[in-house]
Image (tube, rainbow, N blue to C red):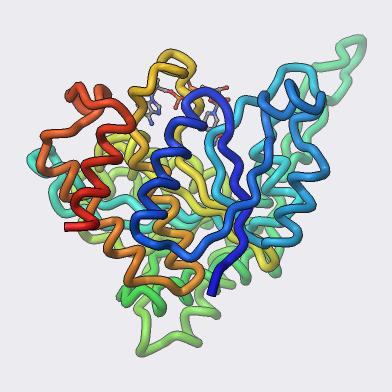
Length: 339
Ligand code: NAD
């Protein structure tokens, strides 16, 4: 059986890390057939539009995309192509796993999956200036919109994710002690859904500021975390930092009708075109995509091959202190896969 998937190589280092990722997936006989499409700056150069209809139509058809990093052109009417894609496909859950890979750092036992609400909260885009007297911009207001439906679907996704992945606990992170209405609603929906999973997944809660401190002091106490958009944005980078930074961090954006998988890092313009980027984050994103389609054994096999290559330390790319090219790193991973 083959699974059609939209492939967006992206900008900057995107094409290099995408080629390496596809070679690794092919070596593992992953079941995808690729529909290559453009977005970001590459699409502006080819079609004069950073988000062409052909790309959107492809994702509508495949419901699945693997995406390299995108550069959003200035003045094209988009704040961010990535955000526009999330909005177009209503990708409500952003999933960011963070697991210790290179041992010997400050944190050796981190294994956290942070699930962030991706469509509402303070990032709902409800902002305006308020005129006072002659000053058109005397004040500015940004509204943190929390809905029952938006909270329910992301919190339920977090519990179902925990069940599917054999995880024990969901921690809901909030600030309901101060934001009693918006954060209070998110928290009360969490408590309600937690009761449905009673006996299968345990539940606890943290206030966001205390959570930030505990993540740094004792991150191994956390398992799955679910939180609102702004807190999730900040804490997901924090947990990436615990395990070696954005270079190894994959992300998934999940909706009811589509899912887009990506590396968390950007286009790395400083090393673009040099063939020295580390493809690990995009390969890990592809593993999340394999898990998403139920191909968990293959996902585990590829993940293991990348982790053992990284831990062996003989074919590291420059960002990790080595001198291997993107292609040499991919070859080393493929050699382990085929061994
Ligand atoms: P960046 O992540 O591109 O780069 C930060 C630093 O990390 C650079 O020194 C870069 O060389 C290094 N780096 C990043 N990924 C690497 C990899 N795989 N291998 C080796 N080194 C790597 O962040 P930035 O410089 O803030 O952003 C550059 C561009 O990327 C901007 O246009 C930004 O909007 C875009 N961006 C896109 C996404 C996305 O598409 N998801 C995410 C973040 C930034």
